[in-house]
Length: 258
Ligand SMILES: [Zn+2]
Ligand SMILES: [Zn+2]
Image (cartoon, rainbow, N blue to C red; front, side, top):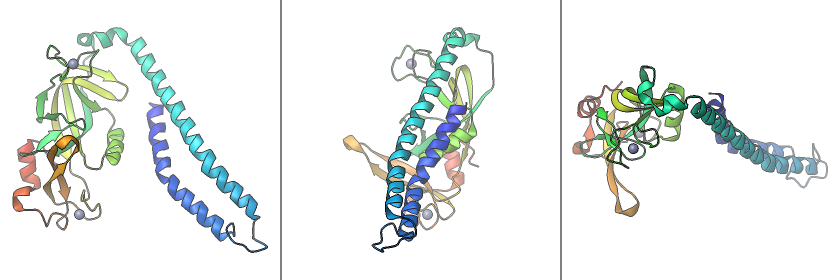
């Protein structure tokens, strides 16, 4: 899937863009672009023009790239749905394929529970339930129901980098399943592992040691307990009732933590 990799590359480029602009500004400053000296190294007008060009042209290039990548994605989706139309509408005819994948989850609530980024909670071994139609046995082709997973670890890891409060799960999907360009959507899911973050999810510097929970207030008076994996320093102010060791968390979630 070339366009997915291109999208990731583009997002990485956008992240370093402010740094590039600052470097450029510093360079222009050092070369005398902002000085009143009569005889700068490079004509001031040339430097200022360069700066204007960079500040206006590069964002336009980013926008054009996003449009092109989006169009490429739509094209792939269209091709997939027209060529596999029959199998997609008839999941029972799908060739049986082992559906191993990766996904992101939060840990919320008391006791701690795996929670999808959309807010649905689930057990480590579960069958999907449709929230839109009680007559659905997920996955249903025309609906969004079912358990989702990415096929590609690199893609899940990238999504993790833009969702820093989440944890990376390895899952096996069973039963009726659909394959789509980024992964699978299926009936049953077993979480085979949870990867603990390398660093503390609070300070992002020290190594993580313990799970702690804090009370979060959201919109519409919603509030929830969110679990984070933290270093000893960032967990020191938590009461012992709000802490779980790695082994305790693994037991509560019935998931192997690696
Ligand atoms: Zn449904
Ligand atoms: Zn910390």
